[in-house]
Image (tube, rainbow, N blue to C red; front, side):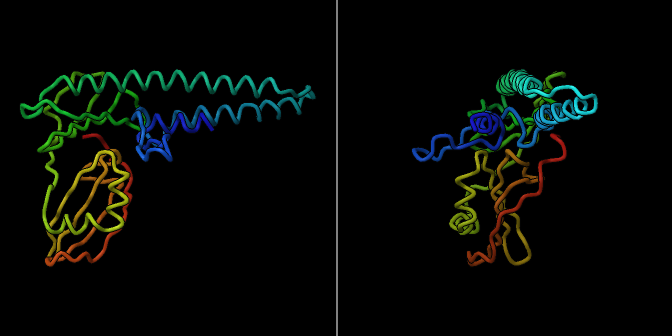
Length: 234
């Protein structure tokens, strides 16, 4: 139970550890929600004792609990080392991102989001009052802030206000930790999106709430959508 909560705390999804006293989401952004290295370690720790029992039964050796305990300790040690590497890389990525100015502005809020496989690749999110910068970070190369893309979040408007009060947007607004609002004009309506930048980008949203609002401010439809993580950090 505690190990499950700890793994949730280290990834970008997070966990509400303080319930029922606080609904705040706590997270370290060190790993992706699905981390192949963590899954590989757990799979080895589960499969190895079973394979050992199979071999022992074939040769007639006596089975015991020591192999299980040994592989459990291996999994724990491997995960601690891996999370330590991830933590160090995450802190380094934040330091690299925070050491630069963006459009002459010191970013008041930073995030470094992990690549699924490579612990040295991160997606930086720089939030200011006027815009958001999404920039790739490769800890093996010199950081280039000009490689980032500036995105401007919608801040007001009748369609946005109408969508904001729908159940889908109210619920998603409580969940989103890096919210980004986007409005797109359609033929006879406006598409409103509330995107959580932990799971995607404005141009390739991952987890988001979507609404279609007509010119009179009536919400035609609203829903959640999940399209998967961005294909790359560029």
